[in-house]
Image (cartoon, rainbow, N blue to C red; front, side):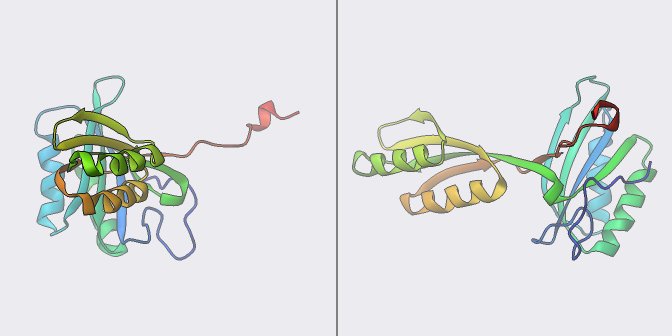
Length: 187
């Protein structure tokens, strides 16, 4: 299986690279024990830090979809993709172009929220269309799903209130859908 870049790349970037120096790979693998360890080990052996990793079975259950965000230069990434492709359980590899994909991340955060500032926090929750998950006497737990930059902005605005605990899923992404009708449907 050779990598299949998705969407057109900006002229100054390789297909799956974004301006932050990261690459988003989507790797379909057989849903078997040990496959994730082999994939992660390949990145570790080359000294690449996986910044984000999301794994879930596909609709069929026979395969899993790994969304891997890694910070690397173009040349070493090409080598990693070739090595990934050699792993027996790897079925398909795509480098997602940030401008041709939809990216989302989930963040859950617990904040200090005594009654004197709780209203300000709830205002931010409303502005960002976040969700209140749990309320305690001095703390509040909220969640937000959105683009990674939107989640970053929300976290930055919450930080002055006192983050007690935060968990972010990391990026998940899918290629954008085709917006034009196939020729067979054109008038």
